[in-house]
Amino acid sequence: MATSRARGTGVLTYLESRKNLAGSACGVAGLALTLAGVAGAYWPLVVAGLYGAGALITPPERTAPPPFDPREELGVLREDFGRLRGYVDGVELPSGAGEALAELLELYGALLEPGWVAEVLAADPEAVHAVSRAVRQDVPESVDAYNRTRWWSRMAPGGESPERHLERQLGLLREEAQRVTAGLHEVEARRQQTHTTYLEERGRS
Image 1: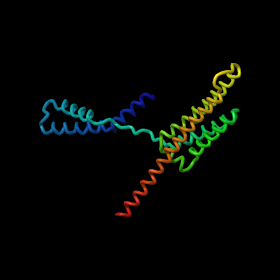
Image 2: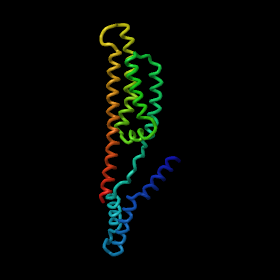
Image 3: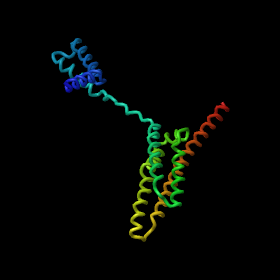
Image 4: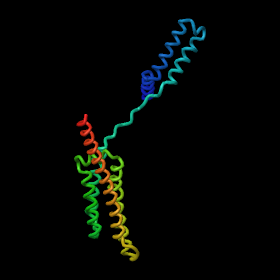
């Protein structure tokens, strides 16, 4: 039963398609040639051939890509950012790394805060990707690696301290976040300059 309905839907879809409509138009032209006495005894082949040619040369139906709203992605990212905050709040960190992490999270929070800043962020897919990767992967992995490495360091002291590695990782992430922020600021500055130029040209005209 389901197969029959699927076949019926497929036939109906084809009958309404551009390929069938174009082929039918060419087939009608073939019938016109037959009535004019051009096709002769081979008119069925002429009609079928013209129908097939019309269907073949017609571009296939184009399925539009699904619309994605970047603001929805930021909404999900804010939820993940809230979970990240809850996770790091339960982790004991040395003072230096703790302060660096707090500053980094404050910067992410300012970028993700609903408002015009988040709208600028949403318009830059690369910036959204960078913040998303940091929130969902880089920061939690850095903190988790510190926790695990710290345990091993207690069992077998020696080597560079896990605290030092964590501080370096957080420093690199902060530099990346600052580059993202600077890029967004540059976009806004260009937009302002464009508007100034527009007003100047309008005034001269």
